[in-house]
Amino acid sequence: MHPTREIAAAVVQRPDGKVLLLRRADTRRSYPGKWCFVTGYIGEHETPREAAIRELYEELGIIAVPVGEGPVVVVETGEGEALRIYPYLFRVEDQPVRLDEEHVDYTWIEPHEVTDYDIVPQLDDDLRAVGLL
Image (tube, rainbow, N blue to C red; front, side, top):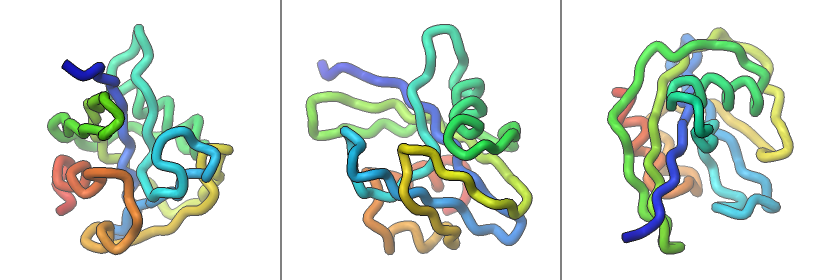
């Protein structure tokens, strides 16, 4: 049995339907340089929803609540562990994106374009989970 880590994911969508992709810094331990959504570990005393809201604020400075959530996406990392991803959909007005030290670039894409990027494993499953693919 692999260790399992629980992760909240915030899929950010603006009014034109495009979603936000973030490129992980090359200094990140897992998946350096890959494109992803806002993600973070779920704290001991918080729900996955609370973690998604917190991470969205910590990583981008955006205050919002999810408008939808999807079923858990399980990702086998290939490093002997599994990730249980809890995807949440956030709809936000078009606004500047403030990156933190975890990310070095961002782009807004149509959901179907996600596999055109060098993404973390199963990122497209998060989009399916929240009904965008």
